[in-house]
Image 1: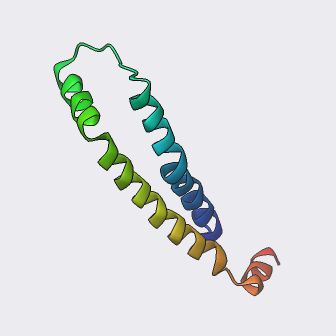
Image 2 (image 1 turned 180 degrees about the vertical axis):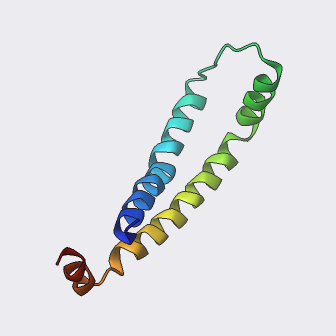
Length: 88
């Protein structure tokens, strides 16, 4: 894949992890939205999520920052002359 495409994909995923995921998590926790599933393993995972939602959101936001950093690096380090040689 072209580095510019990889950079744009990393920027989009990083933006999602940094902005959208924490907002959705806060909305779910504040409004106390519960999923009604009766699987034991899934119930344990949901209970873990409810207990540690703040730390998980911070961790995923940090991953988003790293993805934005590397995506920006990929997008900005493209040499315009190399793009002209790819087209010609």
